[in-house]
Image (cartoon, rainbow, N blue to C red; front, side, top):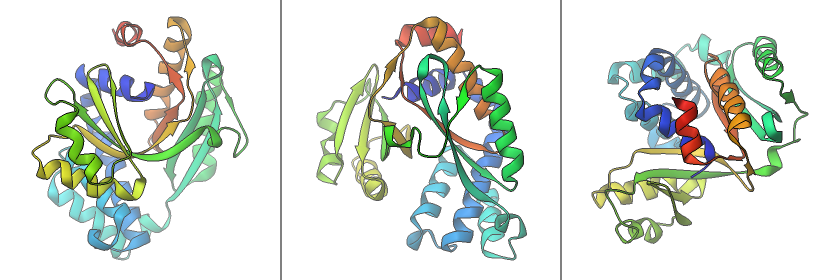
Amino acid sequence: MSGHSKWASIKHKKAVVDARRGQHFTKLARAVTVAAKEGGGDPAGNPALALAIQKARDASMPKDNIERAIQRGTGSGADAESFENVTYEGYGPGGVAMLIEALTDNRNRTAADVRHIFGHAGASLGEPGSVAYLFEKHGVLSIDAARYSEEDLMVAIDAGAEDIELDDDVYEVVTAPTDLAVVRDALTAAGIEIDEADITQRPKSEVTLGETEAAKLMKLIDALEESDDVSAVYANYDVDADILERIAG
């Protein structure tokens, strides 16, 4: 499991994300709207929309909210037309490489916000391509290792998964981005409960951090994720789980 996955998991267990549910729903709905705008309103023929809808359902977003988001994308869609995907790259505390994905209707505003957050943390933004080569896009499904064995998850390999990795108390089933939905369906059909499934940027190598630098980095990641425009933050760090628990308090 990537360091960021560990941090997100710890915060989830401590219910920190519940306080941000309204903002989270807004971001999920925006993603559904843009996916519908770009690829049509039928998830069967629009993998990006299917994934956005599934993520919204996983977050317990009401069905009506999801349907309205699709309609905004396929209808007149003035708000959908104005949004675009942008990516920022840079280095955080300890020299950790960072990729920030945003969905914005104002590039200048979002760039200024991200630059301000980086500057406040003593981090630095880089040029396009400066760190992207350090990451690789994969589908990842997270499953509670306390409930299942690796043998239970072999159905995922049969369905096309690339690997099954164990880190602490979580299995991560790794797939090609295009195979995520097929593998998820196979696991669900086998009765496996999936905690989370997403297309993510996995680091090819990781930077090990001590507690001081890790605390600075987690603060930076949290600040970025609190931005309304930021949809995902990826970083190539490795931090001991006990240190993350102490940082999370």
